[in-house]
Length: 175
Image (cartoon, rainbow, N blue to C red; front, side, top):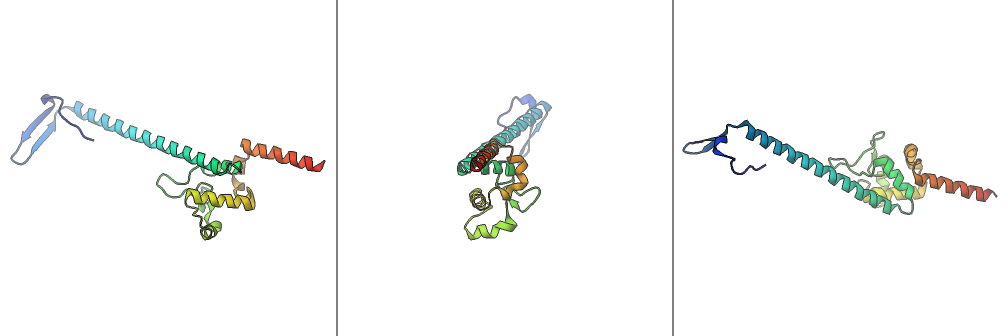
């Protein structure tokens, strides 16, 4: 942080030597003001960082919902699996809590799926690749790969609507 100028000569003693000038603060008030200004600067920085993360998460959520517009249950699954996060704060790929081999936004398991995803040109360590592979899994297996998070996503309005629609279709087919 740059501090320019002096408030007054009563706040500092200036001693000159042949090679340097040293300024000794005699007022603890000035030091306190500098510390307060530095703390405010740090708070502003943290606030800006939090806002930026929230904006980025909102962007990712919109992207996910658009990507899965034809299969909205997948957006609900992603919400439950990762809260729409692909990366940790340090930039590394988000890993699962229960299973550290679950990677990224859709928590694709790298042990079972990384080789196949790579062969298909999908990078499960990126948002786009993780979503693309999740869409492929959903096409092939439905929601089964994410059954462990079902207690969360089955509470969503999307899942309830799907369940009601499935029951209606089943009832119509029985008649």
